[in-house]
Image (cartoon, rainbow, N blue to C red; front, top):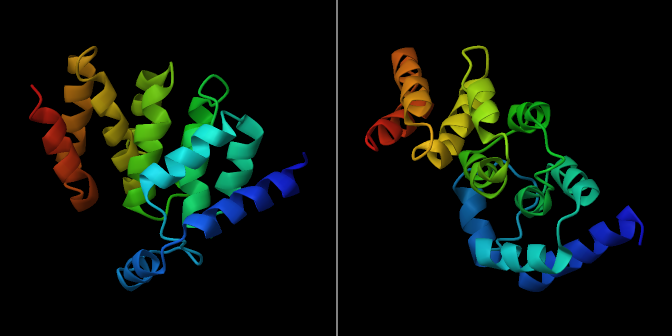
Length: 176
């Protein structure tokens, strides 16, 4: 099946599960996406299970940046073995909402074998606040195995006094 057919099949599944009430609430709440189907995470997870891991499809879904559910699904079907630190930097540079940042962190970045390198790169001072936020969210995966690194990243972020990242940095430090 070619990519256009796969994407069309996925959009049909989005339409099947769509919830106009939820979509309207999200739009009124300021969601930046042009198209919102109002699917829940369990519904998108069910689609991901049927779809399976597919790096090529995940990248096409991520590029469909005007559709909220496409970007969420992209995080669930990405191949963690092929997704690199540079990919993480690229995807986080395109983030438009903390909702997608949280899901990207939870469903993809935390599962990467090199999550520590991702965290260090995203939490670098040269990254945007949204990228650092996402890196801090991914750092929760390392609290049990690399507490010193996580605490250092969180303390540095608190020193920046950035409203977007401060609460997450404090949450990380509360683990120690």
